[in-house]
Image (cartoon, rainbow, N blue to C red; front, side, top):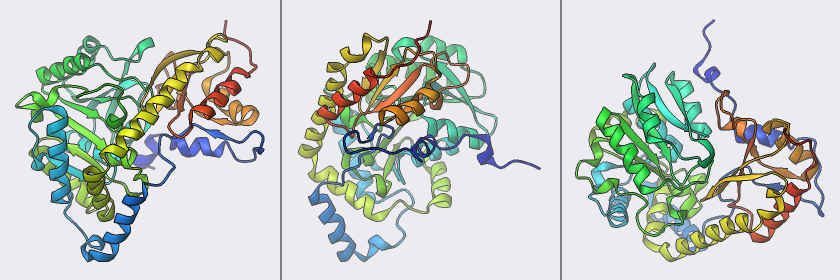
Length: 395
């Protein structure tokens, strides 16, 4: 019997981790610290919620099918914002709105790759990217990034074959947290262009980059759309995770192919979510700037508390946006350690086994901490608990 496409990949990691909570009791004195998922848990600001309510009542069209590639006014707003932010020329026709950034990735891959093709993914990788490739029969070619979690452009050249269709970068990175330097992104873009393959840059967390100004200059090229596909999520910026609104920015030919996929899967993006994203882009720039500063302070809190655990052998490999990625010092594998952290220390995190191929040397030695939903004080408590882990150290 032929197995289904879904049998080709693993179970959703966040859901798997939540199952570790079953049968475990937590106390008021030691409540669970959940640093497993990179998604806002607070609702959108009140003004945005009121806008969603008002438009749901006043605009009957929000309850109907809309354009497959999204509301024209939202596409235009994204293009205008991106032109200002990146200093390039982007038109509304080069913007597609999707049901979240995961769907943007799926649509982009459906548009450019087929079964048996290859996509280069730096490791540790975002697990949903790997899952989608598995289910489509597209080979994920792992690119080891080493201790700094940054890919080597020359290694990318060595991994390319006639079946390579794209290189995927996530910056700021999930799960590693690192921000890819502009010159590194440019070098990889140049390699992709020289080989006639796409560069997919997932910038879900661009609003929380610690750098001022544009994080790269790719949009300044007049023919950027021949190589670049950029992905974005409104979920993190405006706390719209439940509304599922993302974007892909690329050439019109790729969007035309992606439209076939989008029409088949969802017909159109969520209308209320699109109106919410549009209102957010027009009205919440100051609010979002404050959100960014809070996330940057939490990132600093990671560094400020590092002394509690680095003396025990923990190593911080990367930190930025919503994430910190650690190498742990213990003999046990990271998945066993993650389960022990739940049972004995009331901490839920994700192990490196969820972000890496079997042969990756960091697979059994790393953990991701998603710190966006824990404040500075909670981060201090988190590090106290990690410092209390008593397990045999690796030799």
